Length: 100
Image (cartoon, rainbow, N blue to C red):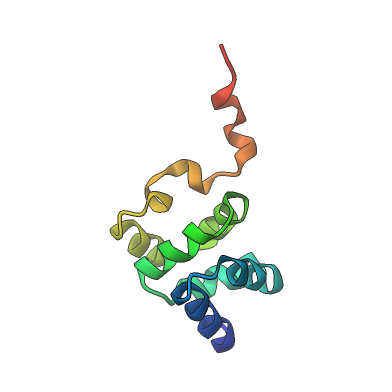
């Protein structure tokens, strides 16, 4: 079970729509702990939290979410769950945008 203080802080940051607080939590706890705490939340809350992160922070967190959390996220219809590009680091996408 994730750190209860982290879980409460995540819920509060999402509920108050405070992206800077989410980024600070991610920076202080790391991607794995952040994703583990998100996994205890509803799909809607996970989607809201991911939407407030920068793309460069979102992809590693999404990649570390449990399968069950990803399924709950997908059920919300969030573009972060449905768009495979959101789960890949930007460097792997660069070849998609090169002219042929």
